[in-house]
Amino acid sequence: MKNRNHALVALALASVLLSGCGAPSANVGPAAAVHAGAHGHGSSSPAAAVPGGPSDAALMVCGGETMGNVTSILGLTSEQHTVNDWADGTFTCTYHLGEGALEIAVKEAADPAAARTYFDAMQALAKGATPIEGLANLGFPAYETADGSAVFQKDNMILHVDASDLSETLGPDSISRTAFAYQLSTTILACWKEHP
Image (cartoon, helix red, strand yellow):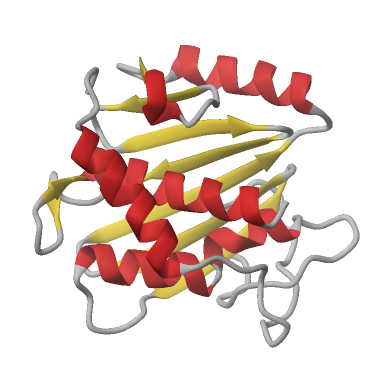
């Protein structure tokens, strides 16, 4: 999507304001286990940040706010099962939805320059990557793909919301999976700004 609909941006920002943001709650489960490169084999509950593990900001993608946004946008009646993993500097949260998996990953680089290099490499390798431009990118390097991914770089982190395993239209409003990935990305980025 080269031209972002202003209504979609307004909807994404409104969902941020209505959902609220927070750091991972204190009563979350044990820290994510380190698994060498395999996704989907980690802890099945959100994790608290630990030395050498993912940051609180990365953990937010598997936390209550993101779960609530997924549930609300898709019109689900209950929260969905998640599996998280921490490997090679990347925290991944996989939401097991009725129609497929939604994967949200946060790569934590050593610094913003390393993050930009990683982001640029991801964009170069992504099939059909289209830069997200103007107000829609919220001032960050960003791109999306027609198959349902949205990727943003903020500081030393790269956020990748991958909805490509889901059907082409989702939820009671029949939004595209790419619009869904974008909407989730922007709500997560807003939480990161509120809780750096």
